[in-house]
Length: 167
Image (tube, rainbow, N blue to C red; front, top):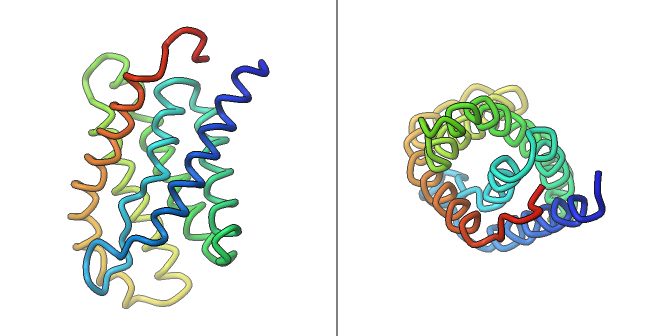
């Protein structure tokens, strides 16, 4: 891996961690439902669009492990990592469709948001118990606007990042 590529991936990780930190100050999107917009996923999506699935995997792992540690919630790693990996896998699986212009980054992000929430709820059911599944309908619906927002943010940023030597 070139120094330039490593630096760009490190920058994406740092920006994802900053987004994670900023988002911790934003109240949940729905009263009583612990749902956030997933701002740090903007940078996983940019990594997918600009680099390889493997590179985006690295960004995902680092942001999902370091974010909860820096936030003082080490038990949050299991939620963050499971959700992040499922989201990465779904968005990565959609990459061939994006390359053929059959799906937009916003569409990829909606699918990734849904996967993230479903995975986190699955962990919640295993850790806390079945009542957590009651959140499924609302987090599923909220996956749409949050995914669109994250996808458009990633598209906006991607258009403004110089293409030369991006990989």
